[in-house]
Each structure stands twice: as structure tokens, then as C-alpha cells.
Image 1: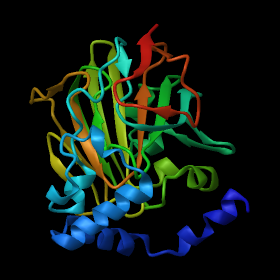
Image 2 (image 1 turned 90 degrees about the vertical axis):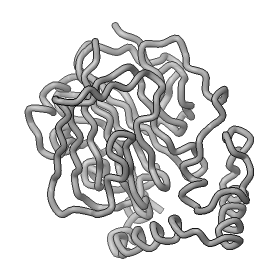
Image 3 (image 1 turned 90 degrees about the horizontal axis):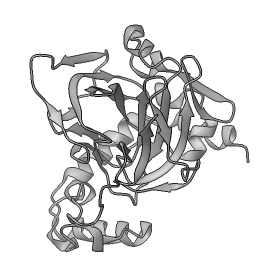
Image 4 (image 1 turned 45 degrees about the vertical axis):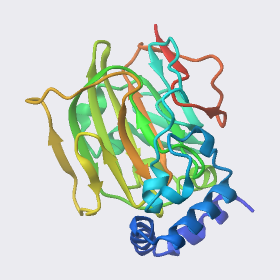
Length: 281
């Protein structure tokens, strides 16, 4: 079956209703039922609880509490690199931005302007720059960390669809990451700006950042923006910046002529938080 045919049911599914229901279930404190759900999930997806700061499944009061669990402090040492990988997951794609086009999958691209919610001035800072799309599967650790030191300047909520973001869907739905709901976080660094975009998906109950808390729900019908120029929100390399409640994708943008990506990186290859992602040119 082709990827386009495989994703056709997603156009018909009530993705919003499913996502809202999943959010309610994940947030519920159901006692023994919650513990059974977590045990099933750990077995189904082979989650490595030995890496968790709290490995006792029965101690988590809700599925969300389990899903956003912290890692042991020694679980992800930080590499000696200018930019480290911000998540556990897999590389969807990475490389050069061609003019303003980001490669999604064979036959599919999307624009930086569309990704950041239509802000052409912001998108222009990354023309001919670099990008990385990183997919977090259900089994992965779901906190997102900083690839380098950065000062937060803006956050933009962009409403959108709630398609799945798994590799099959990325190959089957044009412009997927610029169609789905997303939270665009803009940082300044000593080496120029960069963008970290948290992309929503089916049954992703919410996305949150450490400075704002839960961004969605509520799911708004128009683009919303927060500016932080008058605040000194600085996050260090490796610090937590946000989290997903259920799995999704992170899309990062960097300016032109800044990065050499890790030579060991390959599309579809696994990555871990803290490993070397790139160095400055």
C-alpha cells in the first residue's frame, strides 16, 4: 500500500475529538486503572524505566505524570559540541534549507514562512540556513531540552490540523509539519537566532514550555504571540525548555553558514538527548 493511501483514513477521523478524549484520559488520576494503563504502555512500547528518575510505575498518579517523567541526572551526559541533540527520538530529515524550502520526505517540502505562522520577516532570517526534523515516538523520553544557550524572545502559537506525525504520515501528507498545530519558540544566541518548533499531532493532549506552562489547550482559532524582549529568560544548553504530552516532532531552524551537522547523523537514524548534533563552521 502506498503512503498516500495509508494516510487517507486520517482525513476522515475526528482528530480533534480523539485528541480531547485522550487528553482527559491521560490527565485522569485513576488509581489502579492508571497503573494498569501505564504497565500496558511500558510493555507495548518497550519503555526503559531504568533510565527514569522514578522507576516505580505504581507511584505515578496519572498517565501524563508518567509520560513526562524525568530522567536520572546521569542518564544523558552532554557531548562536547556547540549544539547538542535536544530530544530522544529519530531523525526525520536534516540539512540545508533550499531558499525557504524545508525537505519533509520524498516529494514533499514546506516553507519556513508557513512553519512559523506566516511571519515572513522571521522566516527570512533562516533563508538558505539549516534545519533538523526530529520525531519522538511513544516510547521516547518526551521532555525537550536546549541545543545551546539561548535567550527567549518570542513564542507563537499556530492553530492547525492534528494529523499523526509518524514517518508514514510524513511521507503521505504534503506540508505536514506546517499544517499541524504548533508552538514556535524563537531564541537569540551568541551565534545568531534559532527556532525550536513543537509540532502537535493526533492525541497529543498538550504542549508546554517551562516559562509559560501548558500552551494548549485551549486550542485557539487564530495565531497568538507572546514577546519576551522585556524579560531575561535565558536557558542553558541541556536545560529543559518544554514537553509533549504524547509523542510528536520538533523542527529546528538555524541561519545560513552556521552549522556542520554531526557526520554520524543519518535520516531515520536514532538520536539521544545530549549527543553531538552540530558544531559551528
